[in-house]
Image (cartoon, rainbow, N blue to C red; front, side, top):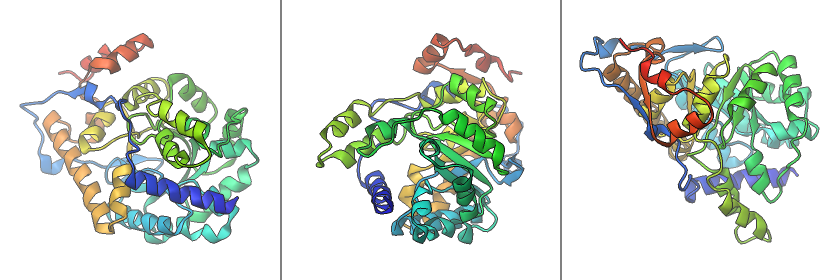
Length: 367
């Protein structure tokens, strides 16, 4: 089983780097979000404070690198590069699912390298929610935390991926109760994260009630794990999975819709992820009340090159965010969260159909 898991992780890296595994027609919805330019910003750009404190940790900017990999030799190099960059920039990162290292202790270093390279950065451990249904419990979750001396642990939800994956586990019955059990037993913040299909208001409300400390929405519009599994099934004796991957390639709740539904429903921190590709996307997500933003695919592309490439790319995102804040007249995160936002297009239509009043965003923070 450990060999199979390791091979699957290697497949995921290869596909995300070399194949077109991004959403086809589905979009994140950021194109429907407009921020209001202020000709009189009354802000000194040089004095803009990008820092924010979440989970008691002070991030230099509201940005983390999302969970991507672990469990293979190449993952060691990737996680090392990312960790070194986030340490330099005082940010945070998540590692990929640590199931591989629980199954085979020899793979521990592929994850543990993150803490070695980032002694003070905010690190997030990671375990699959479906594994909790299939026998994992508090013991295994604590192992993931100890493995990287994590500051928090993410339980990832990937029902779409499991449904398409040739060797997928599709029994999710009782998963909420298992999440609640972990949230009550672990002394680190428990984050629940989706992996590209988004979280609806109804599920966000249940997760908050279950005791999780944050929700990472992982919306649709970025990397599609149905697409990843489509490529994995291609050429194998898994024709039905190949077909299903094609059918469900764009399945999910767009990132912006999921973000608005979730931030309007819960009071715990919400992390915006799923197809964020710029500092502009970050700014829009933060203006929609995200506590942090998370980027994955662009960082993976940089991490296979060098630490410098990762740091440079993240710095570009951060400086773009700073420029947006200057142009909307927000000199800190609290003011950015109150800046007026206009919601249009399919995003507005979706939210209205779901009973969410989008007009509030156009009025909030108006002078």
